[in-house]
Length: 246
Ligand code: G
Ligand code: G
Ligand code: MN
Ligand code: NA
Image 1 (cartoon, rainbow, N blue to C red):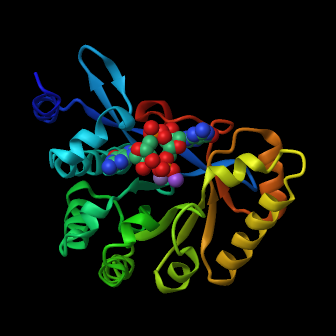
Image 2: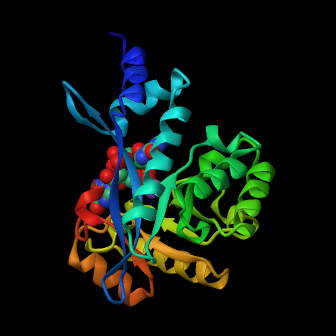
């Protein structure tokens, strides 16, 4: 079988599943949300990560069907099993944002699954905005009016971060793990300064901040002290099957 026909077969046989990585409120170490990360439960090769198949799924045009399956399953699982509060985030690529009906599709999906719109946060990267920033802004704004949030993912690694921050209707911003990794190294004053500046800017714009890739207690303590409200990372919880959390 070619990879493409394997992907088609996987869709038919429901071999894709979301894993959830918990997002914590740093102040009291409680779980306030989950990031849904796709996995392929391959019958022969075991559990595959996005790096093993997303590129081919994109090239073959199958990624959209796969993503929608994953989005819907994530929302359904949270709506059916979860308590009322935690939100779910998922990674939305440029491909999705190019569709003018992306927001109506999202809202229909929420209706089908019974998940409250306010419990969904879409993650977009700066790269996904390059194509047509104005159309993406309009889509995210329509979603915002319906209650769905947006987070700017991998913040700090992209192109023209600052211009997006005030023009996009963002609920959250995710500080890229590259900055978090530098926080507990000796002589890390540069990274500390950058993180402090991101926090100040985000908070001035009423945007909540999630730090990604927290791996040490020292990083956690530093971020808490600096006023970062949320975080995720291997220290707090790895991506795991949904049953582990709900
Ligand atoms: O889960 P992992 O640690 O391997 O994630 C790696 C990358 O895969 C992340 O950067 C994320 O953006 C991407 N990714 C995770 N889940 C999905 C998904 O459901 N759809 C798409 N298109 N990309 C995803
Ligand atoms: O691009 P995005 O930020 O969506 O990617 C999330 C990816 O980061 C997933 O592949 C996830 O497995 C990974 N990840 C989550 N927590 C950590 C961490 O603490 N350290 C590292 N190195 N990767 C992490
Ligand atoms: Mn992400
Ligand atoms: Na990220």
